[in-house]
Image (cartoon, rainbow, N blue to C red; front, side):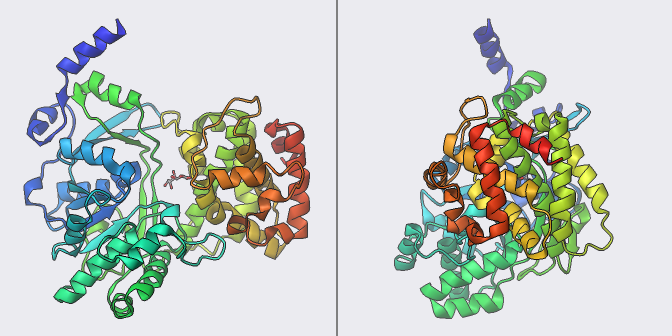
Length: 503
Ligand code: CS2
């Protein structure tokens, strides 16, 4: 019966592509601007769900309402894993559905048209470098994830040991990472007398533009000192704070579009209604008038980004790690559990907030209330596995930084310490408190596991991962508390008991 239903459904649906847009437009809002006439002013590296729910959405909104024909987007994938998004976007002429899910159950789909082309750098570097070096390209934007910046999380220094980086330094004509591509394209531009593009980081990293600049210059100085000087002078790297919760797309989302609207979209994106983008207004070669569609341009984004990373992203990690051990599958399930709600708020109020910078005109209590509401959105169903993925790249910036600042000021550290002890258990066992397996997605998962599994003979073993924890194992106040907590969790993994003890 189920199979029959699916066959009928597939027959009756209409595939999302440019040709079918008019027909689809009878059901779902579609782009009304002329996509053929868009120049590709922005080249975006890392076309995941987040980019498609955020920058590409803002760009689409701009195209819909204003004349912004210089600012279409060319998506770029640099990893082999980007083959799927390449194939889907090629098949769908760059079109996809953005499904906004409101807390009250309202669901708003719309077709986004701002991505005009997609190129796979992993398959063939030449057209990608050419696109980046093209005179129409004015901005290269990035969502390459925290780990993609290639720095040592504890020291912040560029990691020259990375074999891909070594390869690019020796073979500038066959780039592999973002640094090889950016320098190859910038070299072409400087040789051709073309203006530089802006490098606009949209990742959850504090001072993301400054980090991108520092890393690119470290790389370029080794590769071509003259080019490095040109980059230093000509390329702007605005810092930005980006925000929209975008869970992983599920088969249910694909089925929903087919069943409700008769549209086959092989990779739609779902997200919450909330959206925010605060950007420093420093661009090398012009920018879209994004302020017309709600983007905030400010002289200094740092206080905003710190607030968001240390409250929203850290809050997510707190719920995610503890939730994974307890057995909660989603962030909204955590928010249905009063212990988790109280713990989150206590963490935000007593550990994260005291070390934030002054934030003029922002009501932090209202901000924290709004985070709780957003996390609780029952329709978002953001998996704790997404939140916990790549914790080795996230926690040093989101959580360990707060811990270090509280250690320096004598502030509270209990809530954070329990999460780090729980992270050790999680990395060691890979199961929840009842022994059910947890899916761990982390570039460092093996290293984390190896260190964590020594805990029974050396309670501090996990903290000895210096690239994550720096010298924290030597801090008496922290390490004593950590040892106490880790021992308790290893004796009985009932994490909620220890959460409650701290409330
Ligand atoms: C999340 C973010 O991955 C994570 O850990 O906290 O993806 C978060 O959903 C976004 O930054 C929201 O803007």
